[in-house]
Structures are given as C-alpha cells and as structure tokens.
Image 1 (cartoon, rainbow, N blue to C red):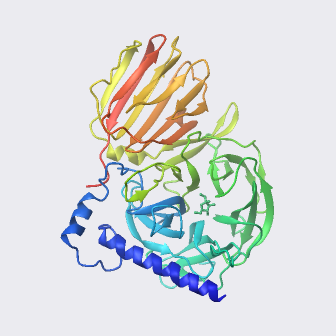
Image 2: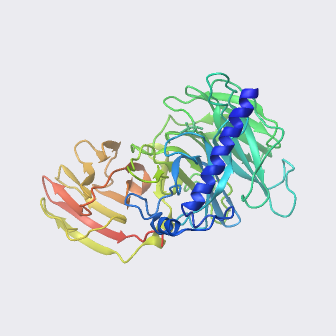
Image 3: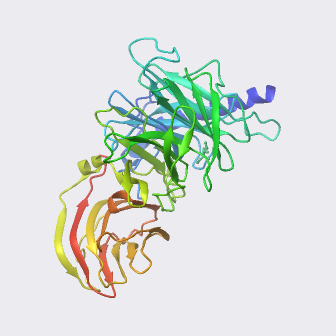
Length: 494
Ligand code: FRU
C-alpha cells in the first residue's frame, strides 16, 4: 500500500508539471489555470503551435504529447466534449490521463485542462460520459445537469504490486470544466484480466443505464444500473476478431417508419446490429465492417446529441500515424455521421464526414461529364494540402481508376472489385457501373468514403514536402467522370 501512495504522488506530480509546461508552450486556447508570464520565446512558440509542418489542420490533435482513444464523447448545452487518452508528459503512450477539448462545431477544438488524472487506483483508461438528465446518481447541485464520466482505473504499472483494473465514475456540475471522482469508487469491481473501457447508454423503457464493457479476449459484458453506482451483470457475449472499446447505441433504421435497432461496435469498428430489451442484446447480423483503413481504432459515438439534431456521430483514433519531429503525437479521425440502411444484403451502417466540413470549404472547382483518357490529368495545376474531393465515375472498360494525392493513390480496381488506399482494401461493388467517392485530405491523413459511406478507408501518411499535386487517372481505357468537385479547405487554426 505504501508503494501505491508513493507512485500516486509521482504520477500526480508529473501531470501538474506537464500542465504548466503546456501553458508555457502557449496553449493559448486553454481556458485553464493562470498562465505564467509569457516570454519572447513563449510568444514564438505560440505563433508556431498548430502550424508545424505535419500538424493536422482540421483533425484534432493534443497541443503537446501523446493521445490515443477518444473518450467520454458527450454533448451538453451547445458543446461537444472530446476527452481523450493522453500522456501529458510524454510524446509516447504512458501516464494515461483524460485530456479534454470542447467544440461548438466539431471543427474548431479548444483544449481545456486535463479532466481526470491518475490516482492511487491507477492510470485513467478509456471510457464514456453521459448527461445524468434525471439526476439518477444524485450528484446534481444547482441548475446544471451533472455530467458523469465512467472510466477504467487501470491499476498501477509496477513490478511489485498491481491493483486490479476496475470501473469508476467522476462527475462535473459545471459543464465539464472541473471533475470530482466519486468517493465510493470503484462502482464495478474487478471481474477478469484487464476488463476495461465502459460505454454507458440510457435505456428509456427500463429507465436504467446500460454498460457495455470489454472483458477479455473477444468477450464483452453488458451490465445495468439504476443510478450509475450499482451495476448488475446482464450477460456476456463473444464477438470474433474484436476486442477493447465497445460502443452500444440505438439508431433508426432508415426508411422503416421509425423502427430502431441497437448497434454494438468494437474498437476496430466491426459491428453487430440487433435488438435489446433491457436485459439481453440479440444480434441479427454476422460481424460486419464499414471501416477498412489501416488507421482507425477505438471508435466511439456521442452521447446526448439533442433529438432535434438526431445524428449518431462517431470519432476514432487514427492509430499509428507518424509525426517525426512534432511536439504532438497521433490524431483523431474526422467526425463522421453513422446511419443504418436496409440494403439487399441486410442491415448495414454507413459512415460519412459530418456536414460541418462544408464550413471549411473555400471556393471549389467543378467538372462534369469528362471522358478521362489514360495519361490525362484534369487536376494538373491544382496543388494543396487540405481538400474535400467528391466525385462520381464510371470505370467502363478501364482496369483501374482513381486519384493520387501527393503521390498516394485512392483507387478502384475493377476486376478485383476493391477500393484501395495506402495498402488497405475494401470490397466494393459498382452501383449501376458507377462509383461515388468523398475524400478528406489533411496534412497527415487521407479518409476515403465510398458509395454514401458503405465503405470507408481511413489512413495516415507522411506527405512528401515537395509534392502537393493531385492527379485523376485512368488505366487501360477511358473513364467517364460524371462529376468531380474539389474544394480546398481552410485550416481551423488562425
Ligand atoms: C485501446 C486501449 C483501451 C485502453 C486504452 C489505454 O486503444 O488499449 O483498451 O483503455 O487504449 O490507453
């Protein structure tokens, strides 16, 4: 026990120092602890932060240091909260803490002080957050609803002693600005192995909270609670080729007269669609996949999006991106809207960038009805780092067609019926001989969405400094370009 307390003060010490260092480095947007006096060196650093050569310009990154999973995605009073797995004091994974940022438009993020820091129960692993609308947990003090974060306390990294992984809660009564850990933690004791990543959702018919929790291997558990403090196991479930970070939510089935389905997703984005009666989730599909890219992981959707909006918005961690020489490491995916369609093959999720991307559009270029010959490039002369490109093409007799972005191809291979980007492929049938694509390009990532989001390929890349070209190309035979729109994008950073 003595060892635990010693380790605790070391961890807390590290994160406080890191907080101050972040201030000195000019986290100018942080609504945070008083900043130390800014030196000339500090001012230069401020001017440069967010404009470094590999800094994503419309994807979320931490001002400094490491991030991984999005956590606690919750909307409250006009603000999207994005908590994230963060190492406040290092460029690599470690000292897991919940970093925090907010946005009113899913584009411009303002990083706030870290929300939940390590303690004697361990570092703070992934989890979720909800608005306790009916004050079921009894933490509400004034008029503001309580935000409740449900997270994993991940034991202490030590050879000598290791606390077990347990599930805890923390609450905020000031719109997420400050957080207090519940004194009765843990709310869910150790079950097995490295059980972790609680995702909580309100189930209106039974007036209970429901938690999906990763247990071990490919196994997840479902629990229910009247008050976020006492949890009862409902059942467990094996989901082949999946692990970590479950999400669980209800979504309307498009065109089905208001009928809703429940969707379970895993860290790698694989998902099941089925029904849930408050006791048991029953899958009605095999394990499905919408995301095929190399760099999308730990996906989570927003809780408490108002009914008037009604969207199901998902963010993932673009795992394994490389940012040599940068003060930050790793980025989030662009927020996407999920929909559930009833297709001839069965129920399928689609995933497309949220419409807010259009707020970043600069004046675009548009082409219609081009006959693209092999060797031609209608985009020759266009250069840039940030794009939203939309197109519909008919490959006809061509063997391959696509677009090269700074030398990286997003291509459709006709015989193989695959869409490929950065070495990853998605199976994709043409629709009436055509393929429709939307491609978001940032400094270090390319996200491709095909056929209204029925397949997505999210990938990170290291752009060549001396090549900002775009190339639309056809191989083997002419390709009909029905429409092509290319919008350069504004950076979210002034
Ligand atoms: C997924 C994950 C989670 C865990 C967190 C730790 O990337 O391994 O299971 O909670 O990262 O940072």
